[in-house]
Image 1 (cartoon, rainbow, N blue to C red):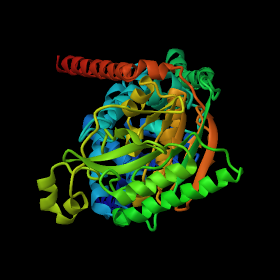
Image 2: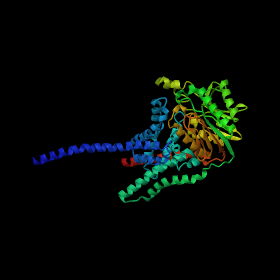
Image 3: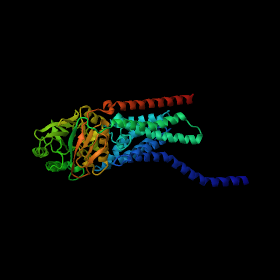
Image 4: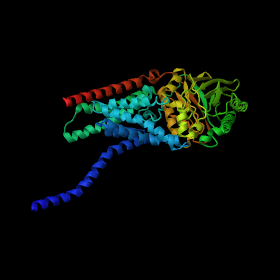
Amino acid sequence: MTVTATSVGESDQALPQTQPARRGARLLRLVPAVAAALSGVLLYVSFPPRTLWWLALPAFAVFGWVLRGRGFKAALGLGYLFGLGFLLPLLVWTGVEVGPGPWLALVVIEAVFVALVGAGVAAVSKLPGWPLWAAAVWTAGEAARARVPFSGFPWGKVAFGQADGVFLPLAALGGTPVLGFAVVLCGFGLYDVVRLVQERRRTRVWRRGAAAVALLGVAVPVAGALAARTLVSDKAEDGTLTVAVVQGNVPRAGLDFNSQRRAVLDYHARETLRLAAEVDAGRVARPDVVLWPENSSDIDPFANYDARAVIDGAAKAIGAPISVGGVVERDGRLLNEQILWDPDKGPVDTYDKRQIQPFGEYLPLRPLVGAINDSWTGMVRQDFSRGDKPGVFTVAGARIGLATCYEAAFDWAVRDTVTGGAQLISVPSNNATFGHSEMTYQQLAMSRIRAVEHSRTVTVPVTSGVSAVILPDGTITQRTGMFVAGSLVQEVPLRSSETPATRLGILPEIALVLVAAGGLGRAVTAGVRARRAGGA
């Protein structure tokens, strides 16, 4: 009886100790999920308008920690949480005027790509030299996200957060795929170094080969970026061109921008006339070309005499051609068009935007979207048509490549203006719809990456800001504020040499996708062999 009583007493004492232990175990199981989401947030914080580019490294180090050795389902979920943590705050501007529905729908879809990448990273994490394979898997995920669905959405490429970082020169070596790959490799390599040091302390065994590979994963991207600095230059090769970037501003921000189209045209003409007075007074150099933003004339100047007269008057006053962002209808097609307007000859050349924005300039799945919400179809009453050739304007003997707004996010849309002969690049944009959000800063960073990638001056005329002049080394020399009128006049270098990134085009991205495929193939093969061995 005594023994029985003692046993019962011991059981009664053990019971309350078990419940806290179980709660602690449940909390520990949540740690990877919380870490995955927070590391995604950390990656977001590394993006503009902040200059905390280096936070991308610990973000991927933590992401590597939560994924290493995980099974497919767990890695898929952790990858999705990382994607949500990153993309939810990064893309919040997409819901500024239309509400949370489209923003959340976009994030939910885009995070699926990150989830699949997470599963891929977990699969290759058991291979020797896994940071290399894992970084290539991330690049492959970005390549897919830049192409599907609806021609892709490359916003949020890791490279676009590195305009202020030490890795920036790698853009000239292999474009955004190589730049992003280097950052991710360095982050995963950083985690692997920490992991191996901890393993050494625990086991007293130092795996020199693995440690050397991990250290190379950190050192090689940094060394490569330092070596690539020789590819970056802001020196003129073909003389200079004096450009004027005009930001006319808009009466008010928001979706009713289109209802203000005559006022917006007048604002840009007025700012150009003010600049002309400064030029005539000798206070500012006369520009060779004036660059207006996208949507600066949403009234078709080919069909509307008043709009034509306003633009013509501005061009004559400044005494230089103006690149006007117009919305025109031609042969039953609605076009987002840049029009080169000569002060003597009128319109002499045009460029039609090729990469048009889904749900902004055209509506995919219109019947389905209308069934969900009629008001969404009303926002895009008529779909824009795509242009079919690169835009390069010749002005004062110089060739200006055009990538309109959304196109700056797409590698091909900028590169083929340079291979088409552009000596500088202009990125006319309209960010008025997105208010004072971070969107304009994110897009400005893309233009800085493109400047280094192709070693070209990049001008960014924007309706409401931030407009800027960017030298070929990625430096912003002049910029405006947001929702103010202003103009930037500067003599900028013209360049015609091609960087390795320009010459190679898509080849570095293809090579990294093949590396990812090779790593995944090895991981799958190793898994099959392990299961067969276990079964035997």
